[in-house]
Length: 333
Length: 152
Image (cartoon, rainbow over all chains, first blue to last red; front, side):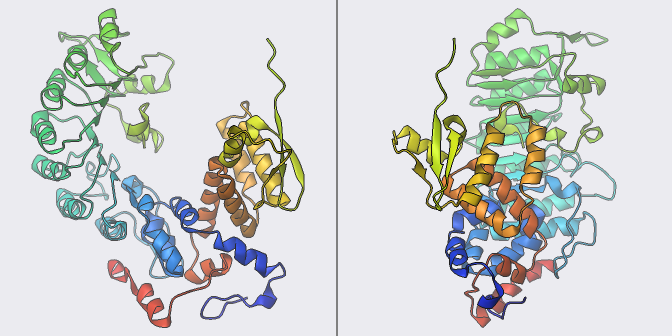
């Protein structure tokens, strides 16, 4: 039962009432199509079905470019299985590689028409030295595409960037003037980046740190991001003096999440003294916050894992999407 | 303290079949919720764009989702079975969910539809969705060639 060149189904083929069908399918309007297209992941969208959809007819083509579909570029999938599609030239034979990343990026950035507002990288993307080698050079190339093609980026999720030069990171992040939310690793020299964010990103409001929070980091935040509204430091190490600085000096802070953290007493002792609970003075200070999210529970799986990993969570040991969780909805993936 | 008798609504399909549904269940459909909140006092709520076949399924879905005792895992299992329908019926349910503004059903059905479509060609999509291609021969050629550069 094949259609002719212009896709019209011969009437005699369908037993059911064609009339009622055609009225029904007219209702398959732009908004419904967009909802369906939003279900495809980034691979589907940039190769296989996404490409198919934009060729079906003019209505579908328009729907395939709708900003709603493109506002999030979730590359965290780049570490997982790839889709093989039967129709050429949409066949992925290789595993993850720079080439694949380039292709996905080129197409997404082209089809998104500058509408990408959220960009998500996997925690392993710029860290490991195995066959998945996204190098500093890759980042330089990528960030060039990225800050030209999605200038209105509002949220960046980049949980790790060990293999990238600090200057490269700084240049890229600070080019996004509309940045409001950043998920980043813990860094040894925070002022370099944090000060630049404070200067360049006027709407910056939400920060998630996926790593230890020392007093140096906390005081840097207080100094350069006085307008910070939401802060999440979970599944990591947090020092008591850092926590005090956050509660005292981030005056505009509304939401603080320190769930599943290992809380270390200050001043530092050797060996470090882990505190099992938050004392009265901390709880009192936290009362002014709209939301203070904590979890220090022996029976909590996440707390247990953080403790087992000694505060430096080995995300690769756990479920694939475990690192994406956050008790703060806007910071979850 | 006992709660007052739970209000029941009558939903009438486009082919005039009537279905009794608890109000608390039916208001998952925002269209129905709005009607109720606006003080609709009709005996039966007519759903002109939903036939009895689809309405029966929608009510089955609504009741599962309104049930506070069903766990997320149970709902997922239910969804997996629920979407095992011929593609035409999947599309029919999407349109009905859209008309009734029922987000949970819309999500599940769109996901199922997207899953089904993943490996289709342009021709297959046109056939299954009963789409008339409105491109001229030249436009068709140009559109097909797009983004080819990205694949080297």
